[in-house]
Length: 116
Figure: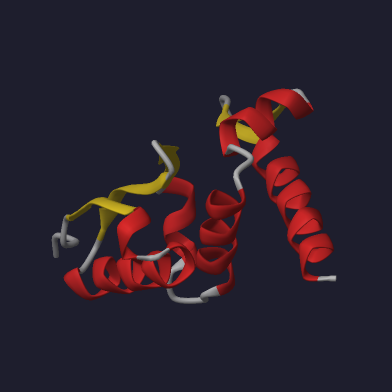
């Protein structure tokens, strides 16, 4: 049953990410990518999907998903992007390590505090 839920979540995530919004003059326009492009962009490994799903389920970390790259290289999950605090970076790292293990995780996240 968990594999089915993960599969359904992966399909939903790929579909949602397939819609990209670009701003026009006054109203946004939407472009729907093909299903294959969306799946290729998201990747299809179980480790990748588990990591993305875990981040999406965390209310304090899911806001980083639009600007967070989650890729797989040589059997390891690579997180890259920017967070606004060291605490959020550490939380993302800990969540990913919990999903895939420390031996299969590469941290390329940078911290860029918000300017006031």
